Image 1: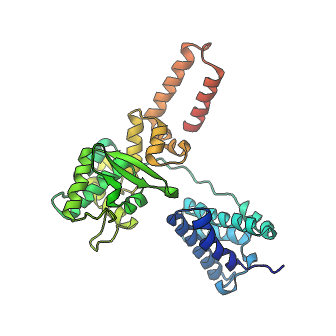
Image 2: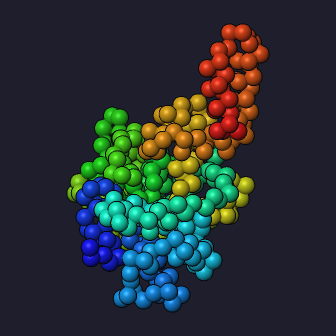
Image 3: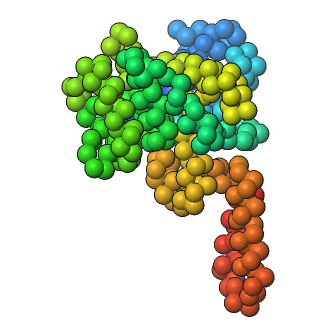
Length: 336
């Protein structure tokens, strides 16, 4: 049997499998594409193989391991980015092994490469006072200022991801009682989030100021009438964060990253006693395990849960069932 080349599998992986069979979002497909571009760049720069001479055997465990180390050491990528690139190559190898079982041995070597564990950083979030003060920073009397105010208010109120904000269209916002915004998240999953009347009024004022009324038009645009980019959103948030930090340094880190408002909303919901299951759905997480990072990072919440657990145990040991005790121990292991 004639052995197919690597280029054949890469082509069919991107043109047939990812979008059609796997149904992945365009952003995930772009991330996978970037992983291959970087992998080919590594092979070329290190003299392992020219792109014009790629063979199936080039995709082996040694080359992939070398590529992952190169990402960290030569390009300064984070462990998270390293693991994302590995996930893309593993997805490809799984596809190749299913499509051509004769390549399974080669693919298994890569599928066995373990992800690299990274030290878990505490979740950065702002206090309620910090969010309130940040919202006072934009000049709401200018079109750009009211846009920035609307953007910050919506990012906090909806807990949206940056890409969800960029993809938002006018028709996704329902100005009625209750006001809602429909966000399309990872895996093209949509969720409807309520927003306050105040936030809705700010967004309406911005849309009127910018003369945006077409339902298919992006909500947040730059001066060239193009959707804001991820770097554009980062720039706006960091600009006001810098101003706020100068005035109230005790409330802010030196730099605000775009996810900080999403983290802040989640923490504020949790601090107000909202169930993790609801917060999971609100944020669009696929599993409550992801949402549990917020429960782990707040010492006061840990103390409260431990006290509640202690009361349950000491009040009536006999009446506290084995299943309840096991559930409690499981929760403590995950969150403390």
